[in-house]
Length: 302
Image (cartoon, rainbow, N blue to C red; front, side, top):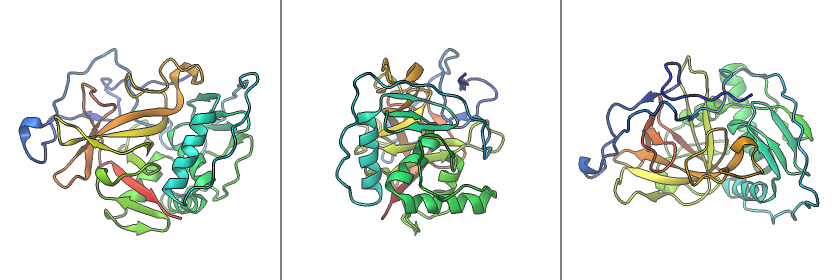
């Protein structure tokens, strides 16, 4: 059973912004905040267990589409973010069934992916950027005394979930914009994001979710009417779709519209073009979401 987080509920792990983020050039173009809609479901966090290191497995039973054949492996991409993006493209082109669960269950030969947002991110790094995954695991284990394994093996069936969204955000949050650590570099400006880069944030203490992990799936573009907003094409795993253009809408490959897919998010930037702690879950969304710290952007290197 999936847990939906209603943003208007008192226990929601976010605050609606009380003031709009000013445009770099004029406050006349500042985004406005719509009134909450009680019927609107929106989950901006990835994990509803509060960051526990283990979650009891949920049995999954998926059957591949009859006659489906696995596509040929794509040519090797440059290491780092380009390789991550190549793997994202491959999985999105070949998956047959996906669902959103807080356990990771895979059958890559059949094209089945049962993952939450950070679980999918961990799968992608294990396949395409194993050294970066090792950096993340070691940082999470040191910061939160977890015991995740650095192995990049991905057997069929249940797989260790690995670090959570809070670990991804903390990995980048400890870096200054433009600074590198291991195989991670914190990207300073939204305009500099390239496909395969990570977009992530953490939620504060007491929240039922730890945050969210997304990957850039295209070139960010500045909003023509609100220069403080940048629309970023993204790929993620979610149970709360990103608006009407989300690829999971009416997609029979996604169980109840959940799991991996593509969409877009609108990030609100400061006068330097750096992301703030405000964003819209999808371009044109009536409300602005606000999280405790700025959204962080990360680039992977080989």
